[in-house]
Image (cartoon, rainbow, N blue to C red; front, side, top):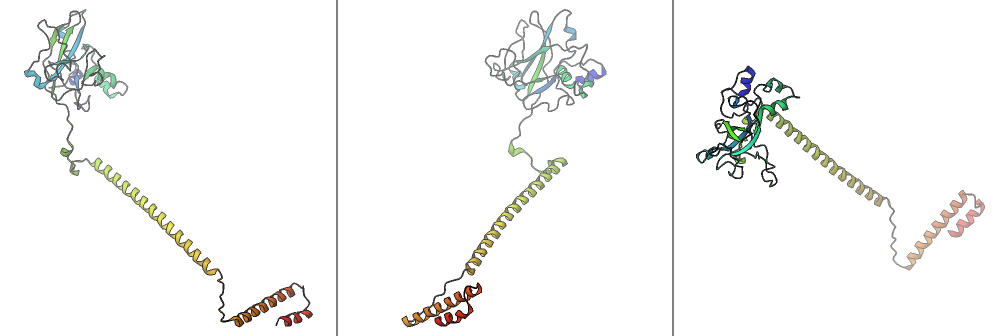
Length: 301
């Protein structure tokens, strides 16, 4: 089947009677884990529209398995059901109303050529697409009484309904869409880690990051080794200097004497040397006359 945006681009009306998932050119990552982007029902209900009347589009959703239970969206008076997400257990027990919006204008559909314009793409997508399951904040808000668009369950199906605003009567409806599977989270043990599954760019980026980590770790180890070596050199230099100082300090000489006579002889020698040195020093400064020097020296020796 051709998607609606291709039909618009060719100027023909789509003979589609059920909701369609949006084209991948317009909605990336579609479906996601909990949302599905659908094409709005452009020109689907033109034959049911009456002039001077206002209408609203209701969107219903349910799980595929609930079709066997109940797929009705109106009561016996053709009034649309107001079932909520909570009442139907997330669509497991039947359809719930997920959203409502104005009837798209078939006479002036969005210009899909503007999708390439970054300034217009947001408005174009809002006119053309509706994302189901995009509101998770109001689901458990007791003060919110409007229509809630909660995250979707897997394998959901959808239906559009045209409702007359004057008497709230269903005027037309589409078929249920084909089941749309949302994405599922892979379990860690099921993720394929084989490098052959990786793209070339991923392998290049991984290699560059690995090399960068290796260089960073090597630089860190080099800095630590240099710091340790510097501390060892400093400690060795300090120890060597201490030994040098200790060796340079004069040690007092110990003279062993055997008896008192030897002790007196040693003391006499030391006194003679002391006074001899004193006299020589005084001669250098001119404090003694050379004539009296010999007498002084002879008196000591």
